[in-house]
Length: 471
Image 1 (cartoon, rainbow, N blue to C red):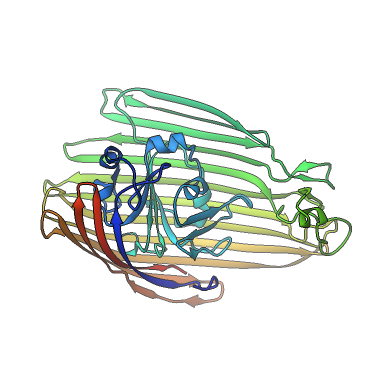
Image 2: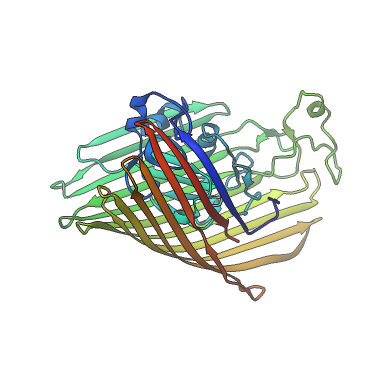
């Protein structure tokens, strides 16, 4: 698939024998002991199921896995997941994700996965670089997941669940350090409020990294510094029997170096010469430019999840509002003269609403039906200075609206054979008000699977699915 293709579709046919997992996590396509398999629960089909019973290629991380392998960002998840590669080391807010060969264009390109935290989709790709802290579980689904997760699930989905409030008081604090004078403190507090009718959880993570790369021209100042602070609060209560309300709010503040990816720029030249030590395997990693770049991300999100048990099904409503502001100021030419400097600003506001009805799980016929809506206003601007003189800025105002309906039907043909049919219909309308352009895209995303339990811990399945990438 060409990298410059902004809109893509894919269908995959897979025949898989499922046993279990990696030593690092738990995977539906590799082998671990039988006991571990029985304990892994996933909710990728909007209901709690054993990992071995789900006809998808899944790598699941439990809370113990997350703690043991120090998973704090998506790049660490990728290191432990087959067919997934993620890089966010260039600068704050910039990432590249590749899953099963389907890649994300660098920078603002749409990722080839649906990335969700507590059921809320990260509709701004900048959010995939956020720190993952106080996390209960992570599931990586490989292969098209458009039938349930919609836009961008062309290559799969990454589902993150944060830790829930607890009925008993619970407190935690962790300090850590790394190379580059990198210090992190993270903590959490959880428990009941008053008469236990309301539960709370509050958590935070703060990082201060001085860096390792220096600008030799500007007094050996560090260029790859990073400062970040993230906070999350959560309230959980049951006002009436069968009704659960889960309120969540979080804020992210990241600030770091930018534009230090061309080491070896020396002298007063319009273009950097080759770095001989780098070519011969002994790089100096010294930057020589006339300014220190800066990149920042500020993001806030509030969400409300309401579950109501109807007796024969559970009705779920998820409402969210997300505000993301980012900026990037850097010396693009990476030389000692003031040749090309740029400032990039990206601001977005997103509202999303999902309604979902999930049948009881103890029946031979199990189903899911849902509706989803989201709208986004996004502004991007690029200001350039060439040889000290400003160039007229480029500004883009974007509006996006997406309406979708989806469903999933699973039926036990026998006590060992399950047939699953799923679909999703998306109508997406992007508009560029700056240039007066508007279009509407319609996508059907079907999925079907046939799964057979060869034994208690071995599942064979045949799956075909389709997904699309927005844009």
